[in-house]
Image (cartoon, rainbow over all chains, first blue to last red; front, side, top):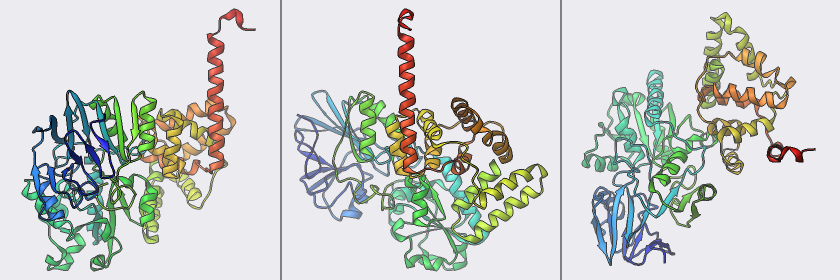
Amino acid sequence: MDLIAPTDRGLYCEAGDFHIDPWRPVSRAVITHAHSDHARFGSDLYLCHPLTAPILRRRLGDVAIETADYGEVLTRNGVEISLHPAGHVLGSAQVRVARNGEVWVASGDFKLEADGVVAPFEPQRCNVFITESTFGLPIYRWRPQAETMAAIESWWRENVAAGRASVLFAYALGKAQRLLARLDPSIGPIVCHGAIEPVNAIYRDAGIIIPPTRLVTEVADKSELRQALIVAPPSAAASPWLNRFGDYSDALASGWMQVRGNRRRRGLDRGFPLSDHADWSGLLAAVEATGAERILATHGFTGPLTRYFREKGLDARALQTAYGEEDEAAPGAESAA
Amino acid sequence: MKAFSDLYRRFDSATSTRAKLTAMVEAFAAARADPTQWASAAWMVYFLSGGKPRQTVPTRILWRLAVEGSKLPEWLCAECYGNVGDLAETLTLLLPEGVAGEAVSLDVWMRERLLPLPSLDEEERYARLEVWVAALPQDQRLAFFKPSCTLNNNSLTQASQYLSKRRGRKRADMKRRQKPAQDRR
């Protein structure tokens, strides 16, 4: 019998009696990270990394949470459970499950490039690798982070020179903080949307250096806005909240911006392909590094990715989950892409 | 090619007519200052006003470049094309980064490279295209492919049939070569 199997509530380990990122309430939920399609309300007990806990509390309220550091092994009914860095967002983890020498790893969402903000991805040797495949097509190959950040900075500088605000849409948890921590704050003041500022505080508490940011209501001299970088969630696009910025240039930082049509359909001035998910090469490299002989792909381009692996002689198939449903499954959606 | 590609990118990223106008004014002012750029600037006018040279690179050759250049299975290239919805952009995203060669002006690209292509045989056309594209920096490829690609689903189907026929021929060739000499009649 498989150590982890999909049920109508989520990925279930019967031997250890726990679910991984369940999409319906369960008694024990092991959480890879705090994005809303992976961490849902209603379970009796949540197990996650200590850095995920405050985000989970903020999103789900006063729920029962147990934490485990990266690499700490918990044993339940003879099943070993441990969390390992996934490099996706703060506290994100892969879940390693082992019993009698058989090892399964559920990746959650992950990316390979070390972003200098969160703990970088650490591949785990395993027999079965349950991988995400959000960007599982070879058209999705990311440029190095430094190059994309430089492009964003030069867009911001151009706008400062032209005296207009720079509105940068980015997912509120993870992407926004990655940008804030990596962009050059000397270009101008930084203003954050109300959905982003509380997450900034959690990142700062975790020791991540994010330059000073303000809510727009805290900016007394409104002429400052014309030099400012304004970071907002994609849902703020075309909302009246933007009216106060007058003449502005807008851009979205997301892996989906790799394809021009996705940017043009949204009528954005610029699109910066920056993702917290593995690109095509990253997915192949991760799978190879695990040494797994069996691959199960969840949300994204599961069909093409698993067919590609099968043609390379691996046992690969798609796994139906509810991940990505609220978030990055479709271009233009909220959260993590 | 770089000036054309830069202008193309500015056009592509601008949503306002004023920004597009500024981009054009700046590009042509730069070209005006340098007589070696005049011929290329004339080509820019030609493309900007919707000009399209008679097809110099047929879709079947571009599709072959996508499949063989990316070293990916054809079905996967087709998935990518289906997702992007544009062959020029698919090629730009799929082909591996090349080693940037010397800068070639748009005028040389057009007059010395692309326009003479149709008079050459298929293999020679493909071979040249492969070399040129490999030496073209990634950020200039879209501006090169875009005017070269006029694709509808029909021509992609034909391109795909052409590719399997080619493979069929190759397989037959290989079989022939593998057969002992005395069997060849």
